[in-house]
Image 1: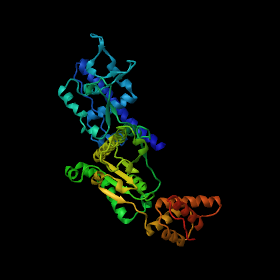
Image 2: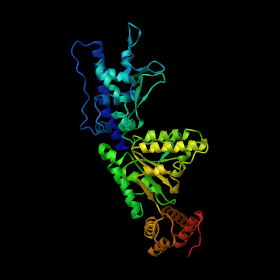
Image 3: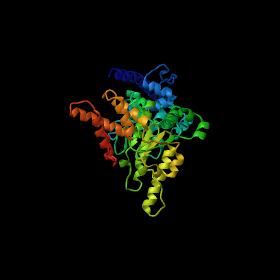
Image 4: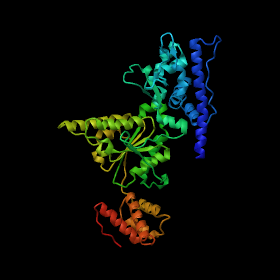
Length: 452
């Protein structure tokens, strides 16, 4: 809590300085506009932040924001937390008995609060310098800096046909970062049908076949050098946008764990898409649900993990009726959104043949998570039993050799054996492990013949 308090204090100090600059800017513009001061008034400059270590200052520097962009950010913060800063714009033109339209802005429902619009910010910063006001329209372009990083969005009434009448808002992620120093992690809801994956395991706990691990390390390499690709037009043309991979293989072979650990290792959040909430029987609803996820994730650098992907990414069929046509439209839409996504998308399935061929062409890495070999099973048994059992290596060798089961199944066996030993007030024994293996084999519909 102490560290968090220091972070908030540091951010608050810097934001107060920016807020003071905003107040000076408003006073300056009104003085100049109404010619309240016969002397030449100098344009107020913001305080330098080159040596400021607050999250706000670091974010401004990392994104190379200029003074007008800083004004956009601090105005949005003021509109959220300190709306009184804009009260001076509530004054009326006595000659016309109405508000000054030059100020732009809106009034709340009680007509007691002034809400700044984009035209308000242009007035504050540029006054009547039309050349710069006209140039400022680039804020509405997709490639504008604050749009590319997903920092802002526009809001207003349906009747607001002019973009200059829109209110500029800061994305919730940015607000949390520059005020609290926290990462934005949306909660699971019907509007965001995805769950944050987490694990207490480390990269060294990941036991995979060397061939599989080599492919996984290629994904790590892409994450590490992603920014190099983004900064180079040559690399963008040759390598392409984003990275898509397919994990396939039996349950419990490490697909979800690998995706989660890729995120942990690279400090990136991994979200598993909840397909039960995404897929809808109503025409167009599935696309809308997925669109919400992609729109939110687009500028967050998240890893999107589609488990049981065959239900969404299945082969397109010949059109026999309207249902086939709509299913094919869904697949085509997914292809487009995945191809446009600039981050890492992982599709996981137990049924590789059911993936549409069009997806296969767009997938950079296809990894078969097979049942672990004897040596991999031995490592897994040893890792899971470490610190909770003193079973001899002879027993571990036997389990590894005789039973070809996945890492997920081995984990379930250990859990069962530990709980069973506690019930019997005993330590884990071979027979407890054997009983657990029987249960796992029965779950998979396999033979339960065990050699004791």
